[in-house]
Length: 195
Length: 381
Image 1 (cartoon, helix red, strand yellow):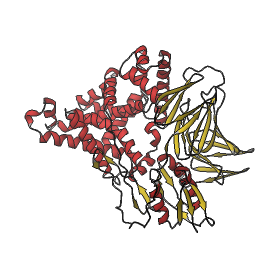
Image 2 (cartoon, one colour):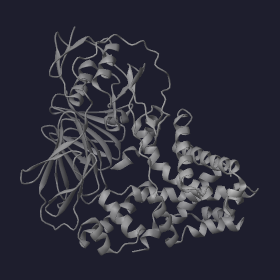
Image 3 (cartoon, one colour):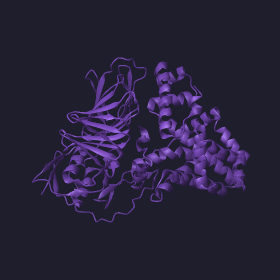
Image 4 (cartoon, each protein chain N blue to C red):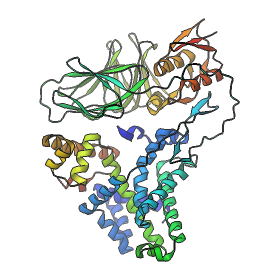
């Protein structure tokens, strides 16, 4: 059940405004990974990228009356990560920056950052669906599809029988199909093709 | 790129992956891709499965920081004084209430005995053979198998996985939630059940027949996975049976409440009481009392599931109704020394507060009371 408890957007916004802890947890689980992923595309320093993502979440919680939907929250978070990344690059000595990082400081840099943002947002949405799978089912899915383990390896890793792995794999795909079609915004056809 | 453009492109790219993009939308995406080779590269890389899986692996590996939340209650007027949770993350205070505490603290003697903590997650599982397993935080992972189904205990929830179940009739398990506890259940069909304090659910470990039957006492919120071929039926002993045609609903059927109440949030719900039947639409409520069945529209259906989201909703509730909720969650005994004072409540309160904070709220609402030992709360006239 994880964080899907708060699937109802209005409910989540209401709790967020009221300062409810479960809303904070839910917002972290929805957005944090995508923000780190995005920050890493611009700032080639993992620890820094995480700090920047964390800071943008903190900023969000300081403005909780400014938002009435999740799309605006998402836009705010990504834009504030982008700005923080640029500030970080500008503040650094140019000699310390990589070629890629220097590119972001050119006039075209902003546009490339926008594309990275778009990409990160799309990937984070897809990842959300994988993460929402129930515990063991999600484990099997991750081991097989993301970490590319074979059925036998995955079974050994999880201490379950290969047949269970196959069942869970089938269940994961069924659940993903169900959830995604229910939400009506994405069926992971590309994942299905791997079967 | 402005925010609206960004949102639109995100939506179009996701739709394209989904294979549900319309011709018109695809043209819009194409014209965006044609503007710049970088744009096209982005569109193309998203359909590269190998690359996609690598990105998923990267996202997977990013750890969400533990938000060790420090709870610091304080009060503000909110119908009645409600405690608001304060969250401190990574050493930085960033969770602020809309208004600072403006109330001068009412004089309350600090309870001599240790404060009563709010309820938490936990339950008792009774297997088909009658053996009993406590479901608490000390153990996680697979805890049992029941006629082919695998039982996995997570934090505050138990998941049933029917696996490759044979066709024979499945055994029944029961989960009982004591007072001061709550719990979640993931049924083998993917349906989810949230269980409030002093409740129980009995269900088959795999759904093999023509219907999906469960029996509930107390309060439970359901999110039922759709399967038209196998209707989901909720029996409420001595009250009614609900035939679920759709997805999200709450059922509150405590023996000490005046009637059983079913509230539908989404989908369709057919309610049956001793031969009478009615169909609920979202935002409607059925009250079952004896052989009576009454349907009504409710202004705020979500209020019925505030408990599941960590809140008490006391809007338009009388003192005795509020006290019953508190009694179940804080495991209190409520005694009225001389009748039930006529006090109406409003607003919401977090369920995460120690009892002392709740008592401050009660005092603010002009409830006179004293606390005896053994968690006995005596309401004075």
